[in-house]
Structures are given as C-alpha cells and as structure tokens.
Image (cartoon, rainbow, N blue to C red; front, side, top):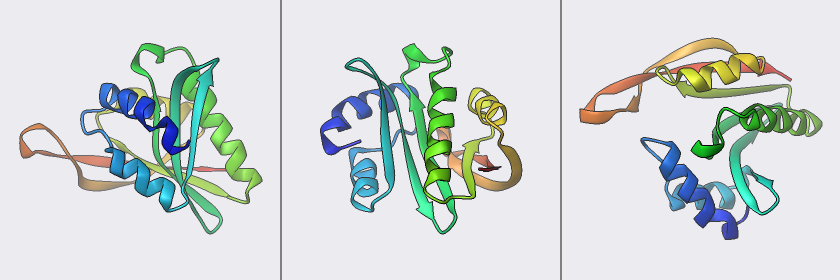
Length: 141
C-alpha cells in the first residue's frame, strides 16, 4: 500500500466499517513503517491489511475486503498470505483484536488458525456511547 492507494482504500473502509479508519490513521501507519498491503484482481482493489511488526510477533491492525467481494474467500487468502509473509520475516506469532459482535470476522480468524486468548473489556465504541468488548486472538506462525 502506498499513499496513491488511499482514496480507494478509504472508499472500502467507509463502506465496510461502522468506525472506519481515517486517512490520517492510514498515513500514520505508513509513516510508522507498518506493513501495509493491498490485494488486487487486475486493477480492482479487493482489500488490504495493515500490520505492526514487533520483535518475533506481528499485530494485525486492520484487514478489510470490499463488502461486495466478501464471502468469496478473498479474506481467507489475504489472511493466509500475510501470515506466510510475516513468518518469512521472522515472526513467530500473529495476534489481533476483533469486536465481540463481529461473528463473520471471528469465523474467518478461527478458520485461519487463530484462537481466543483474552478479552479487552469495553474496548470499542458503539452507537449511543455504548462500549463493546474486544476479543484477543493469536496464531502461532
């Protein structure tokens, strides 16, 4: 992912999430040296992922597939590829946080070999100033 991809990335981000990342969030990640990749089919942007490398680990910060492309295996493929790439770079474990109510993402992660390792209480904002727990998940690479 480069700054040239951000308009297309933001269009997907806004469609896909209730609390989307901003351009500033993506720019900050790129500036910080986070791993940021896009997935394309020909010239069509299908999705993207942003990861923060840590010593022997990598944290998945954002993985999103365009809503009109979801349910076709693209998320599974992207998740698998970033895991392979992270392992090749020396990561031993990948971890992430996911909204407790995001059942489709949780199923994707479990199918990709992740297991639940904890809960962050009241982590995510929801509609009406409510809070939602984050499920912590990890996978050995």
